[in-house]
Length: 146
Image (tube, rainbow, N blue to C red; front, side, top):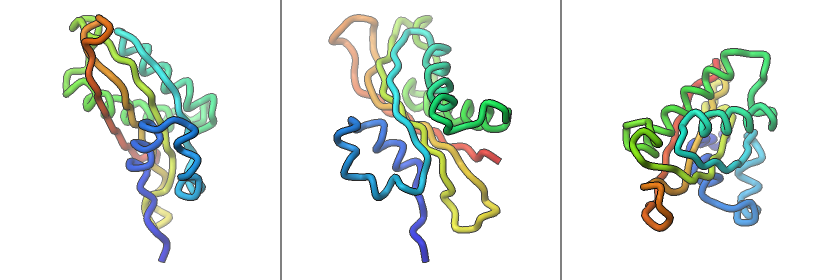
């Protein structure tokens, strides 16, 4: 029996570690497609765009298939709900984020027909747009691709 791939756990790990720290996890990452990135803004549209652009550039999702972009978008929104504590908004609420993110695509179920899923995790800081007044935050979103 093969071990179940936990794409959410891997996404949280990738988002919270530097690429050097990730080296010791190469065995766990061999069965998934993933990428890391950084984003920061008071504008959530910029955060969403950074993740989407990274997913496409790193070939985690196909630019030609709308369902893949759609699945990614919902995973991003779910992860942002965690970061923002349920209220997705930054600049209009006088807060800003500085985040590392990870996108992981894989098949978390043994049954092939369950298909592929995508996970997005954010780790970083959120707070008032004043250096030193932010605190740590984390968010995770998972969605099926189709």
